[in-house]
Image (cartoon, rainbow, N blue to C red; front, side, top):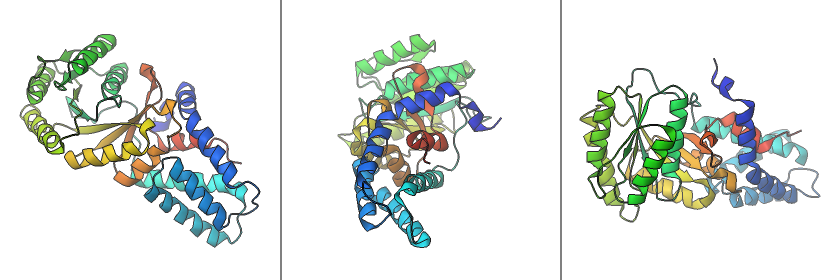
Amino acid sequence: MGIFSFFSKEKKETLDKGLSKTKESVFGKIARAIAGKSKVDDEVLDNLEEVLITSDVGVETTLKIIERIEKRVAADKYMNTQELNRILRDEISALLTENNSVDADDFDIPAGKQPYVIMVVGVNGVGKTTTIGKLAYQFKKAGKSVCLGAADTFRAAAVEQLMIWGERVGVPVIKQKMGADPASVAFDTLSSAVANKIDVVIIDTAGRLHNKIGLMNELTKIKNVMKKVVPEAPHEVLLVLDGSTGQNAFEQAKQFTLATEVTSMAVTKLDGTAKGGVVIGISDQFKIPVKYIGLGEGMEDLQVFRKKEFVDSLFGDTK
């Protein structure tokens, strides 16, 4: 079965609803940018550049998109503004495809990796613990056994929140006392997972960025300790970003990619914001796959990021 076969009508409706504010904002701006224009000229392109930048696509990615459109306008000699949405859609799709090689299968794990270990990083407040809970739910729904590790021992609230999610989803949570060594929690979690033949282990980590060196050392220590139990661990380092923060999400991505080797990203809170364009820019600038997107509060509202469906939802019909 192809990966897009999993994209149900319900998921499409959730995606459309989640991106509705971004869609309304972007297309409202584009409509104003090309008002009264019959063809794509320098002024239209300047206006479009401003639209993309103010939609949190980011300066570098915006310039890349504009340059591609300029080449198409030059090749076609004459292009009317009605075609602009279609071309913009094509170029954003191409950009996402270049930077994310393959869409993930639904909530699945590679064969022969048990337990599959995911270390989750991100600053406090971005929806990190909530994303872990939703991931646990989705993996369990997909038939996988799951175990969570409360290695954010710096905040009592983080451990309590993870415990609540564990109870809600029905998966075990390994924890220690407040202020315990995070690496020790990770070691205990993986040891328990191996003993109980768990399929997926998700490790929460502290989200402090005020001391990048300290964060780097802590994450490196957690990784090294996990390898003593599962030599390949972590199989995935997932960075959670708050999509509603726009350009601040870029800065967080920059800081965390400097502090540790991030292999995938989740962009949350896209349903409450018009800043969904940040997904395009982050994907382009960091060349790290956006694997999941958060589109609401419900456990079903964390989706695997699919480029085609994302762009289709963002642009709708472009006749």
